[in-house]
Image (cartoon, rainbow, N blue to C red; front, side):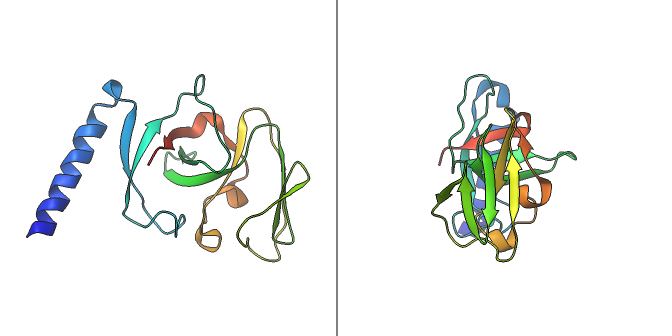
Length: 151
């Protein structure tokens, strides 16, 4: 009984907070899917800040939510920032030709992107189970970012 009541309260809270986005910069977002595990579990809830392209600065390895061309939302981690060259060679990440220590990336796949001033590269933390990140979609436009992770 307690769990059901808690779930109803949690959903009502999400509706109330998200129903009035013009009065708040913050939103609660539910994680849908395993692409960010182990960092974010499926169905966990995040407190996120609305992204303002003109005032907010992006930081590498921050978590953001973006929308794709059919208005579906995804939560991913920023790997590459505007005007950088991002390469994955032999399961190693290079940013502007400098090796970056990371967890193991997928094997036998190489990628290379030269980002424009309005593009970023996003990956899911669960590399083998993250279908809609930059490895499939390529660079993501800054205008597609909806919110950034707070807690």
